Length: 215
Image (cartoon, rainbow, N blue to C red):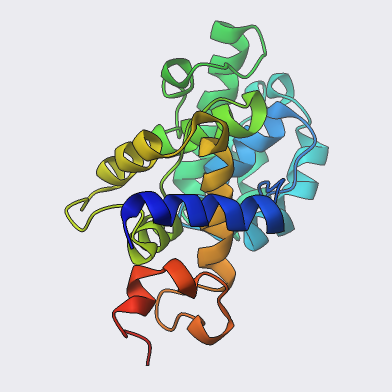
């Protein structure tokens, strides 16, 4: 099967079965999503969602967080990975949002990446989820699943290379959605150590399955 056919089958399947995918992080405002995505680095969404209700109640906006201190924020996220660094990032991020962006989470990827704790992946998540921009964040799930399916070449050995291939071949209207499709499929079906090929509905166009890697 050609790569073109794989993309067509991929899009057809998910537009029919999961037409409106979204993040599993809980949030109500743009600032809350930004905080949650920063906290989700090297941490599960489930764990983040357990910590953020109390955090958001205590610091409902960037203004509230910008005027707080390390010892105020840390207790709320101490159960999350790397709480010391993330507390520092959140405080500096909130201050910058207030001082440089008038309290509004910026829309452009370049501006988002200026914020402490925000790298390319985080910026792309915010831009796509909040502002419906055609950006695609490549985390471990996206990297693994896109390669297994055969959507990207085996020569794509870095997240940036995978991102460029996916965005080059996907129609712009599906780029943001594809991010969630790949993440959710990797989270619940195409697991890293033992993919659930027997329960997968993508085997008809999956390169990994075609090669008989299933055990």
